[in-house]
Amino acid sequence: MVTRRGGFLSGIDRFDAALFGISPREAISLDPQHRLLLETAHEALENAGIAPDGLASSSTGVFVGITTNDYFYHMHSIGADTTEIYVGTGTALNAASGRISFTWGLQGPCVSVDTACSSSLVAVHLACQSLRAGDSDLALAGGVNVVLLPDPMVLFSKWGMMAPDGRCKTFDAAADGFVRAEGCAMIALKRLSDAMAAGDNILAVIRGSAVNSDGRSSGLTVPHGPAQQAVVRRALEDATLEADALDYIEAHGTGTPLGDPIEVEALGAVMNAGPRRQNPLLIGSIKTNIGHTEAASGIAGLLKVVTGASPRGDSSAPQFRNAERPHSLDRASHCRPHDADAVASWRAATPCRR
Image 1 (cartoon, rainbow, N blue to C red):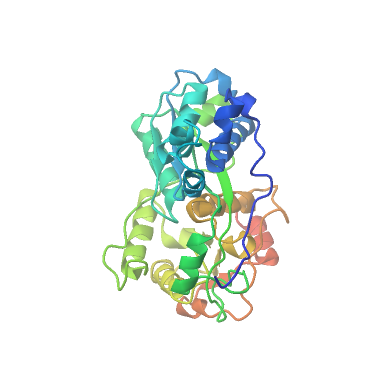
Image 2 (image 1 turned 90 degrees about the horizontal axis):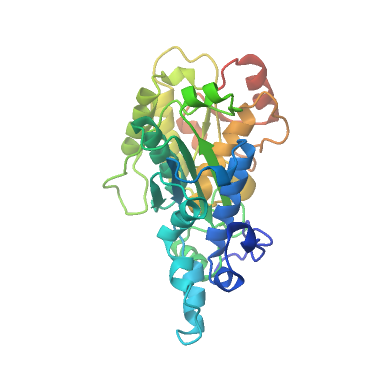
């Protein structure tokens, strides 16, 4: 293992089980990821001004991105004879979303999504589709990642994926891998017309989204530039926006010397097309601030953009770090890393921030 560093949460053993009607005995067997999802789902509803206990029997959907299952292996190592009976439901990935629906009696779609690092963004996409189709009137969407065992870090180190210094140096010539991190976030989504009619505090609008797969590339874990171009174009089409209408891109940007150049080149091919772009396209990645939260990385980036685009936003929006010698951006002439001055200018000069 080349590094022991990571973006680790504190207090993941703390949980108000009684708030969610969970007995102390069952709580012990509950994966910390499930606990965090319950807590952040509750917070998302509170921030939206929605009482969770008033949602029983409602068409509220739950869409959760979750990949790792470290707690299951930890509990399994104790031995079957001493393992609590609740381990089965406490560590099942499908129960991560199911417990949220069960706790408040939500009767909309309930889905746990595992598409690796894109899990939480795919969850948001599915939530939007559910709202558009009328399957949900309210949707909770997000993702979670908790690192409890060293085994994956050992494997990633053997693959050469981990940054020895524990820093994601996204788009930098010194990029040498990512650092694993923990995190959890959930957001509350409604159709715009419903949110406006209810007088809700609307933080942002998702105009469109798209999902695809890399298909066949040079390796199972290697990104495929043409496929990335295609999904960006489809998202723009779904949002009925031209590429030059966008001012900022929150990239995946893990800080690997293989993935970053492919991603930036794909973005450049789509965003630099046509003569109408007047200003540089700002680009960044929250992984330079908090590390790679894997299944939760997409929702982390989305929240960063919402914070940065807010008229009230200030230094609370994470600033892009570690690109001391920009390298990957050479492949996209109109792209440049964002900094505090660039974000301030964006807020001041752009009435509708995208």
